[in-house]
Image 1 (cartoon, rainbow, N blue to C red):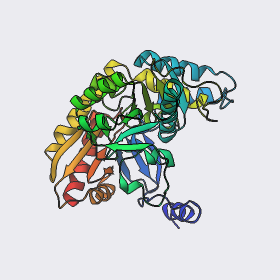
Image 2 (cartoon, rainbow, N blue to C red):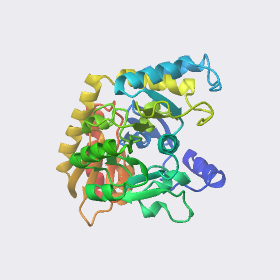
Image 3 (tube, rainbow, N blue to C red):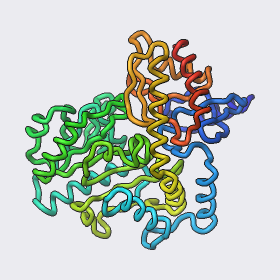
Image 4 (tube, one colour):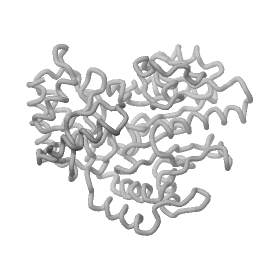
Length: 392
């Protein structure tokens, strides 16, 4: 039995079948290149769905993580650790936010944001003002409550009843927002709807909604689980829109490959949680925070400008490829709209043969390459993508 067959059999027999895996087992990788157990080479245009912000096995990231691992891998949040405190300081200084709560993943961060919004409103106004407004076509996680906040019916089947207190709005319809404002404590939005098809929300609407929420003391929560940590060419996408959220959530790329998430609180919300009112066992894990400090240290203005430039290069090349109708997104978060006869899932499968790892987002092909991807790796991946498009 070859190595792939052995691994596939072990997985099939022992892992819950909640993933539709492709017939590939990845053995190792470096930056935007990885290899399977047969030695086949792939350009990774996925970065683990936006997680490996510095690519596979970055030297500086490995050094930072290994150094911390040799000192302290975990300690209860009953005690202080330096990596956690330093990372929170860095995030606050670079965003203008005031406090940070660390969690493990995007859904958990969004749960924390929802709890914070409801407690803020309860503390200030009492009961009856707990509704969270979100957008249709949104995606905020797979826990019962974050599924309740997700405005896509496709994710809702089987799991009823859901947490109450969520209403879905149409992006771009300010009148609808105003009509649903009574009883609302927060508006929760993705600035680019990633799982919804890499769809940027119109800037005029975001700014108008932010202004309205500020006037009504409705908290603005920006879900940056996928758009944050340099993905769009700024540290956070809300900078691209010129707004100041009350709460921001981040995950995926922040840890550089280790599970880490953050809830960032602004002036209104920085004191909302008192000791014992919210917690998580692994939040602020020192090894994960050490990796995140390396990620943030690398993401300076020059690095972020390069991310924007790389994104522009990829979009220009992709627009000239066969079967491509349009390209959406920002920075290195890219959605490819295909001609009707071409299916995104078929293109992704074809990419495995031509040597490129791709994602889907509804009917689109989605790209989330490592932020460190080189020009040579981009060109190699683009060549493989063009071949996959022709085959798809």
